[in-house]
Image (tube, rainbow, N blue to C red; front, side, top):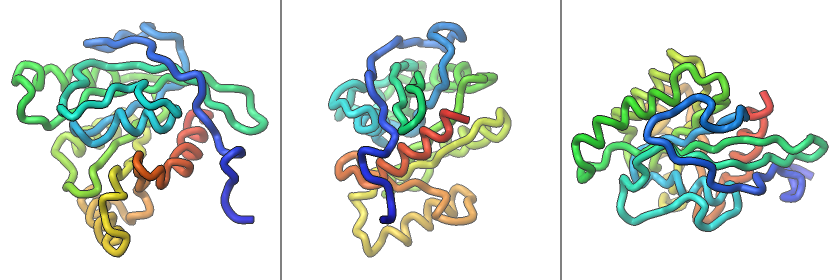
Length: 212
């Protein structure tokens, strides 16, 4: 039988809010592996976190982009078949690129995010969310440059894939991959928090990276 049965897949359980910080302080939370979520405002970070942890409203979603204005940390445990539960922190980084956010707040986001990403030995992966219908933003490229400099892996997740007709998906994914300078669209992780498409495969990958 090909593929994995649902009950054999890794799961995130016991998720809860831990802390919200205007600037990262190492030691603010217990030392567990961390996965952060980055992307432009309204790309679906909160929705993806909620679907990964199996909660409808752990991470606050809003119709008003730019609501996440601090580093929001959630605690959870990864359950994998045959492996002891693994504590993990999920860090929701503030979104970028929303014109209606005050200029002073926009300027604070860069230093805020860098305070978390730079020199963080607990960071196992940065999930970079990209809207399937839009070109990557300048800030997306800046984050990729920072990742290369700091040496942490980036998992590019193309969200809202359900909004793209299946006949157009290959073309749109290729477009995003080329814009990011990737060799192939197979380096992207298409997903939908609405239909759950790609969520199981993404969970498999995150569980492996947390264990590394």
